[in-house]
Amino acid sequence: MEKVLILHGLDHDKMGKDAASPHSTTIETLNSQLSAEAEVLSVRLAFYQNNDSAQVCREITSAKANGFQGIVFNPAAWMDSGEEIAAALAQSGLPVAEVHMSNVCKAPDSHNVIAPAVTGLVTGFGESVYTAGLRLLVEFLRRQ
Image (cartoon, rainbow, N blue to C red; front, side, top):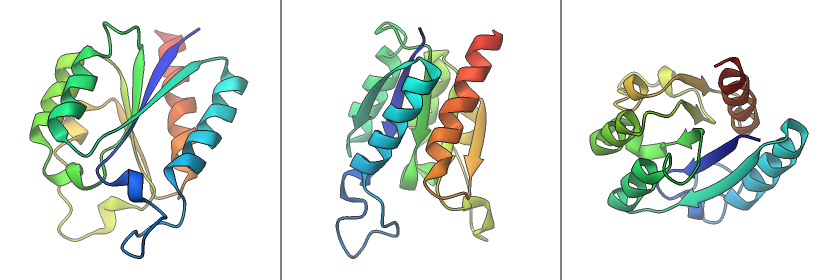
């Protein structure tokens, strides 16, 4: 049974809970949807969110030693400023599905420093990108 780390990005703990949030869904709702999908796929999940990029880097670099085979990650605002996170992802040696609820490629000033360090991206389909990213990552792991 595969073990996958679900890594939530910057300020996702506030998502859907304050007026500044661009999304109405909450991290708890996403985790519940992912847990249901994990049962269907017969995989184990662990969830992690921290607003300190150094802590996120530690979680990423220790993921393989902690038994994870892959990561589903929404970097949020770290997408264009998270060079250290990208380095940690590359160092981890794990396949990573990067997900974004909005189509981040539509923004004219879009610059993704995380993308070169991930296996693939799922973007623009709302909260379903999480379960789609999980399914695609598990399929990828099972083909290895």
